[in-house]
Length: 226
Length: 226
Image (cartoon, rainbow over all chains, first blue to last red; front, side, top):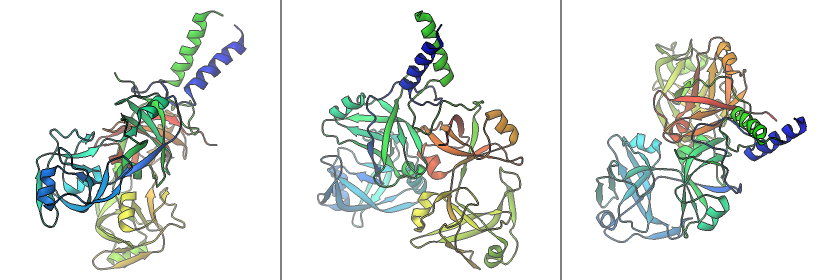
């Protein structure tokens, strides 16, 4: 067989796969259909509160301060103290609007300080998670459950999803181009018509790759579900 | 041309590259020659002290407590307080033996608490890094420089290096199989006859992938230097 043809085939295969590295079994050669960078936002620790806990803590509705990147979500003037078995964290942001269930989103570093075994979960998936005590200076609320480490995720609109060739709840691998570059595997894609394109990670994740402001991620693969 | 031959070539190329994903330009298809897992050790914040600073802080030699994983390195009974522009961290481990220059190894989370702009550096490479104040309860030492975030690295013996097909100062990509799996890019390999096989990462890095005790890493690629 003509050696040129072989080389041509090999080149085409390699081009299709990109400059490659061996990867674990969850990966495939499947690529996202768009390699535009995705803005990365660092999520600090924060709480979402239900109406009942808002009343217990503040005795009044939440006060709007400023809009956040996802439409309809906003930072409030109110702050809370988190009290765990082994530690306390003060001055924690409260996000509005009120939600059906209160939820506390921490990094693993925070969870270690508080002494709470917070699992990595998607926002809203709080069944069976640890509880915690919140105080406001004037009120106190005890959560039976609701403490999580938010699973890193990418918000996108249906149009973004079409552009990247991914769908709601699909998992992707994202290259983070920080001072200590890394690929985060199995990042959940969340598609909703109201979502702005943004990847959300916590400070442990940001620090692990030395990311600063205006960080970007790039989808470099799609998780192959077993 | 016979389609079977083409498929056979493609299969061979893909086998050689492993199940693949697109990767950034620093990666190549080059693989380590051994896919045995590497034990991962989490490095907490700690300091190494020169003889002069040991005298200023404690007025006496360091007291041995226990051997660490790398031969000759040991944990000491002594502890220090780190004092930075915006914060203080107490009860920081001192490692022996004495070194020619004092050095403080932090996570980026620690550096943020202290208010010190610590760069990511290899151990010993402290020229131009920020200083800090150390106190012991009885003494005080002011470092003009020496505060770093230790670059993640893999210790290995020459025999290990031969087995993995890597060399001193080479950089590799390592798959971390935690609750939030990730690939750490550009991890420095350090080869010395006295080194035991171990990958050292800090708590930001461990938390970012949800790693616990007995964590393992696997070399999945080698950085192609420009």
